[in-house]
Image 1: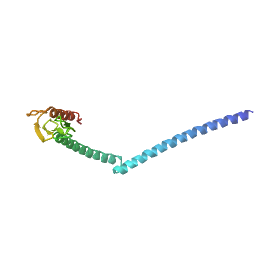
Image 2 (image 1 turned 30 degrees about the vertical axis):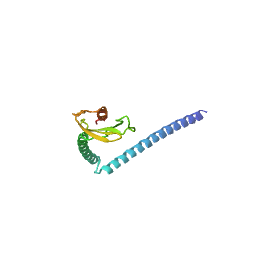
Image 3 (image 1 turned 180 degrees about the vertical axis):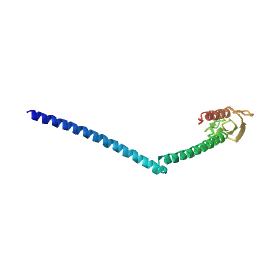
Image 4 (image 1 turned 90 degrees about the horizontal axis):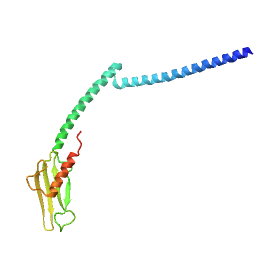
Length: 170
């Protein structure tokens, strides 16, 4: 009996040793696969960026990034120039339609404020009646005019300035 117990004990030790070797082998396979993946990434990097090694590839990347940064700075300057030019342009002028006379329907009269970002430009008003129509244009500076403004004209100017102030600046 003691020989059987010894053999059973020996089998347990051998199985435990084999289990440990199996776990070590699995860990080695996982580590090896990760290492192969990293090696493949490094080879792809070197292939994409040229050069004889990592140092040359990184140098090529740095050169390209510096070029991109220069282009980005040029684009920012261009964008600032365009924003300055746009401030002097009329964008989405509000049109206010209304009935100027009690005997006319369909809101045929109108006032439109054509202003830039500084509140300068003109307000154009068209008055329509059954017998005639008239169009007026009044200059506007800083949201006001030297000519008397009707309630509708002032409302169109105020709406234009309000719309301008809600435009976000980058």
